[in-house]
Length: 156
Image (cartoon, rainbow, N blue to C red; front, side, top):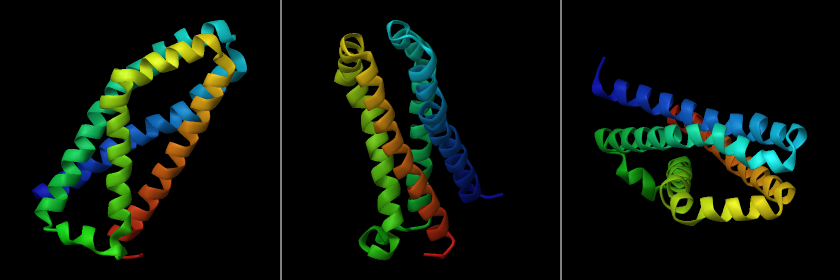
């Protein structure tokens, strides 16, 4: 087993944890909260459950980013970013950058506070918006993962 194999394994494990968690939040947690939890109790329950995942997602995105960077370095694949045929590499970088921005910058600086204020004032609308945004992020992530696997194996 060589270093590149280990980097790929770490990359995939990080993605499974990170995007799998996004999937759970999007497809199970948020819809369940909207259907079964009274609006007055929703924010506290969401924060208790999702707050544990946010820390883990930060670690997963760091591992995914570091391993992706390492594989690009190790394979000397920087030129792929100049080739439109490797659009899926741009997509991976864009998804990673977006989530990293949300998790490390937007959420701690303003998103958490904004969400709290909105969820207290308009819980139904705020959680519906949160669900819609999560659905968009999940869809983009799943398409990117699928395209990246196909691209990495020469299918696209």
